[in-house]
Length: 318
Image (cartoon, rainbow, N blue to C red; front, side, top):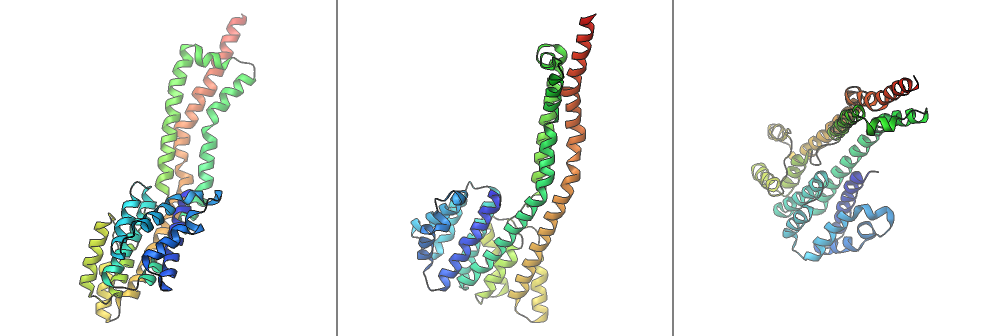
């Protein structure tokens, strides 16, 4: 599991344990203190050191001794400075906590629902990392071609290093080849970054609205509370079908909570399918920097010095 996926999976574990403790009658503040001292959050084992940020969240909330209504603010403050997706995951927990406490919804079931959504996100990231592993490894191997070309020429007995570093032709080749390799590296990173999951809050507005209406409030009041919580937590949820689900609930005269949870799951499934599609397309798009940058750099750095060295040695022998 990658560092990113590990952090999100642990955030889900922390949320799930919170839900179990609160359901068992432990107060929210005490639940956070137990988590801060538990192995899942604070183990010194080498395999758990990657989850230090999750431990930091639990430790900061436990140390604050805040009342349940203020815990969301502590989580938000701790999430500052984290990588984007991890920050979104903890901000989503803060929004979930705020909605549940403000609406009077059962906190344990709300936390369980959010933990499930985080586990689905972590699973989507693991799947994307697996799908990306082959194309990324291929790109890294191909990036070594120019250096292999230079070493191959030297192994054949030609003075390619002197040609590269001690002649005007070599200097020009180094400048052009290095520029092409830097461009290829930047292009590869950008393509890989674009192929990875982009959001940790897909379907969160539906999930939060289901929590809010679970507190017994009206749909309009619940939607206003969700919008306020998302804004307070600095979260922007991509367009979803909340309005259509609410209208369907009103037209059919059925409770909206289950419809909203079902819609949130559908949104996450769609995001997961998109992540797979982007990862599959990466194996093709990575051919662009290969053909336009890496191979020309190989010719400039690996082949041109060899040709110049051969010609120089031939002329010198005359």
